[in-house]
Image (cartoon, rainbow, N blue to C red; front, side, top):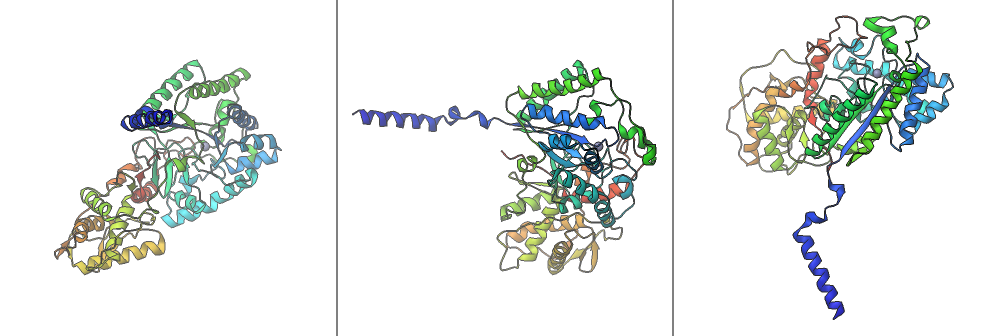
Length: 500
Ligand SMILES: [Zn+2]
């Protein structure tokens, strides 16, 4: 009898659990706000900046949380030269990212890439910045987890080398590329850049600044809860806790390039002002640590929060139809609900379907590979015309062959011997893919459809106010060719989806 009663009780409980599953939901299911603090550790002139970096590392270590220090190659070298093993040890307890070889000595990355082609810019970034990466990795004895450019000195070609270096994250604060103020993929790399309300920094060092930061943090935290979770990015420079003026502003502003013998030390904060600055950091950390559903993450943790399974999960027919329908409306990234595809991936998928099928056997699924956007923009292309089905299929095979051989979309797609822009090729394929999947060969002639690369809107224009406002650039600096290269890489852009 007793046994039976127990059984009844268990069944009753199970029944209620099934009926009201949310009653048993555990707190871990609440949306999580991930918080990342990164410090651009770059001042190799003022020795006291070494101590500032060490103290910041210790502030985090004392709270059992981790920060990311993005380190300049020359900074790593001088830490070793000055015998600062204590600083190297303190920073080594945290995450180590990369921040170029010399940071502000001219030419900086946007300056030396300004007039280069895609391929020249890729090689020049490798040649100039590979040295610093080796310095940081040899001093800190580990692989770097992320990269960020000096000031506003951004280049699209850097992405190709980051991929070569197996650095999966671009972590910075820059408006050159921005997708709705949230993390995104571009150039085959996860980007955490201009996050709008989720990119924070105290713009002062007093109680007011602390209050303002905490309010902004709480607001961003509430907003991310509504969005189902997300990432708040907070940045500083260790040197700004001890100086009054940036080390590079004092020496390299407006294109100045004095020899090492003439480098000046930046003016310092008083002892009291320095204590106040470190106090501000401690106060904001303690505020954040008191909030619910918060997790501190470093650059090494972030890629796993925003995984990209585009290449490991093939696309089925339903998804291919969704891609074709989306590309008929606009040439941009495609939302498949479970994941996003970049415009390049969407075009690749449509071309691969035609290349890998025939009228009798349609490919069951399509596996996508990564491809860069074109290296240049063609001026010579047809504005209207029509093609046979065979010409469209041959062009798709040729398009895929170019990608497999170069890992880059061609600047021109040749259909029946006529030059076609990639966006027009995408718009044209979008009109035939759905029919083809329904086993209907599209009626000939197949007309060329004009496509507009709408995804280019996420890349800034060279003329945007403030884009080149970094004080280190020569006065009046502009880089229209570089931003044109950046727009061509808009083929690779798509939102990054937070893993739930
Ligand atoms: Zn910097």
